[in-house]
Length: 365
Image (cartoon, rainbow, N blue to C red; front, side, top):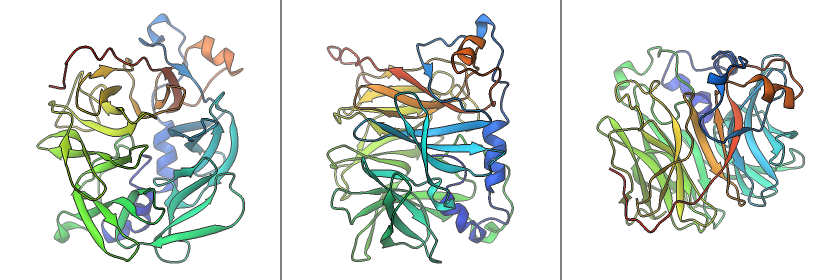
């Protein structure tokens, strides 16, 4: 998930930067973008995506559907309430069900363990750890494992004990305390003055670096980790077994391909890319859309088409794709949600995925 500098990293960010991102700055960014209401024909999207979430004064990002398809986890922000926080929503209509967690560490790390349980990073005991709790936000919480370092984007493997996560490493220790420029929170794959690596944390305390990279995603059968890795000025998608064997490159374009997630059958990957108009010098620019590709690096297909920024896509068991976007919202859509205006910024959209014709042999170039 991407919302700011990763929250677990933000908790310990004083080790890197003088002024870490605050919850207020996250909310400012989530709501500062273009006006959400216009109504002209130019505001109609170029694809068939439909708006799912639209609550007064709220913005939402990074939808993650549960295995049973009933709920979504989303990052939610609201200036009047403070925050942000992780919420559970009904996938059918986007309505909020409950607050899952407002722990700062949970913002960049909450993920499903099963349809009823989530895990997340927290420093609630004074040290970083991966915790689990009920998705309804109630009941006891259990620490799965203690962790050290600047850790983000954790995955819990099928054995319930082994953790795959991203660790940041300061690139220049001499200047590690200088203040950074304001971040682009859409971007959760690159960080000023820090490199990232994907690490396997075993229950016995041992560690194994699998690769450089960011945005790890576990396949449904638990046999593969998909992730994004920088190669020159580009970012490409790779997959590797959780033990670090059989590293495979999937995309190879002069573009930024990031935020991979798996289809429920494990045969396809969704990802965010600027490949229609890449800007390799500026990660906050370019045209961002959702794409799909099969696990052999073939049948590349553009899923969404809109001038806005689409990202953070996940596919539900019904083949519906959920993603966040800062698209303009026309008056007809506002009327459907019984609102006269909407908060500018990101909201959750959905689109039906049509599996590409695999009779051809097209591959990524």
